[in-house]
Amino acid sequence: MTTAINAAPPLPEELGALLRLLDDETAEVRTRVTERLALCGGDLSEWLATQPRTLNQQERALLAEILRPARREILVRDWIVPSGGAAALQEDWESFEALLRTLSDFLHDGISLRQPLSDALDLLAEEASDVGVTSANELRAFLFDGARLVSNREKYNDPRNSDLAWSIAEGHSNPLGLCLIFMLVGRRLDFEIEGINFPGHFMCRIFEDGYPLIVDCFENGELHLQSELLESPQLNRTQRSFLSQSAAPGAILLRLLGNVQQALEKAGRTTDARLVNELFVTLR
Image (cartoon, rainbow, N blue to C red):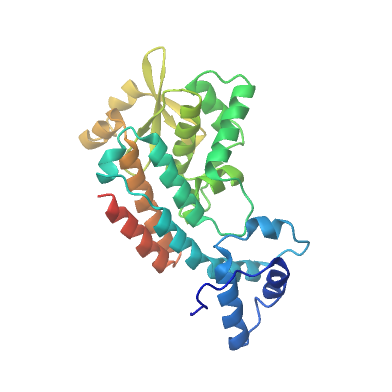
């Protein structure tokens, strides 16, 4: 696909006409529509929210595909790799969250209206504070005991589970996504919540009266005494070792990117999967 150098993005009145031509099967028309919409920066969600006409499923799929290359370019541009790679993110939660925001924007379909990640996390923290949440355990109950955040069992491998802004808006995610929301909201409230990079099932650790408790966010925030789990005959030495350790932001980010790459491959999005793998390599 070729576009005119420095071509101006379409104005609102042209956008309306372009969207009406989305499913036109004429090759020349489709090429022109794709070229013009590709100049929209990869995100039309705010503009679409103001329009009386709702796109059907086929139109949404076509538009999401057209907007995707622009979001790839933005991801590459905004992916700021810390000096030293993932190892440099031992305590740098600010840079970690910035990378999560960049990844979230890339995974967004560019169509659905939702809050930016940091704003969504801020709002969750404010809501928790307003209802009197004063500890990590109370935050666990606030987020997971009801219907606010639940496990996405039906679409466990959906790439959007790693788009934390989407997960908050839709109210579900996979184990790592739910744990990340728990940790990031907890940091805003100055709660001690650690990540546990357990093989095959990410979890969190909190402390009550000095005792470490394991939180399984994917199972409605289920609580376990760490000491009891460490004595379980069902765990091998390697699993016990992971259960006793805390995952630094860099290690969590590597795991997240690995999840995203696999999910994109399963979804048939090979170009996006390759790009995410390149990002993974930059952090090694």
